[in-house]
Length: 167
Image 1: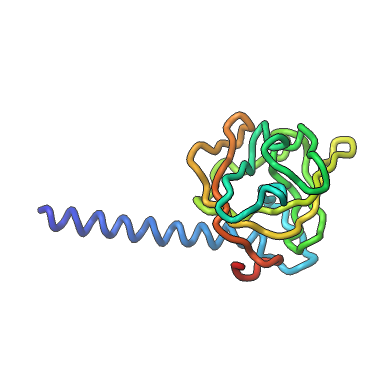
Image 2: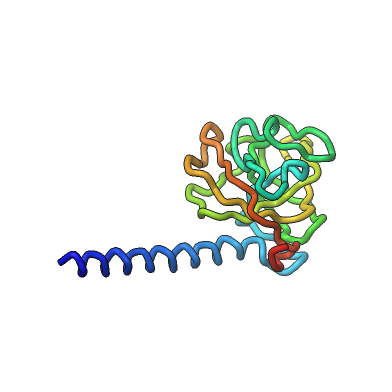
């Protein structure tokens, strides 16, 4: 009986691992598009001076503008960390709407590819920024699409722009 339970637990663990790998593949595809193509799936953002290996970062939340340091200056308080319209090529702009109007995803994977921005600006109701590189973030528990439930994690690596390999 115990042996059957162990096999079942091992099988469930294998299924969960395969599902996690599949979700990582799917999560990465939003940023792995061809340069010049625009994804409407969106992506989370961190400031370039916050993006260091093993750094604990905030990629979503009401305090994004306080917790991130873009080298081009402070971000507007209305930016919560999610870019709606994304071009995965480096140095290409992304845009979004203020606050929770950016419609971040309800569920996220355990590891995210996030945009690294050197500046975040606001003009009217449009927030925009650039992408200097992509960071891989191991996500902490607690994220929710409400800015009052911040998305945080640890930078575990960097990706070449356009969805290339880990650097």
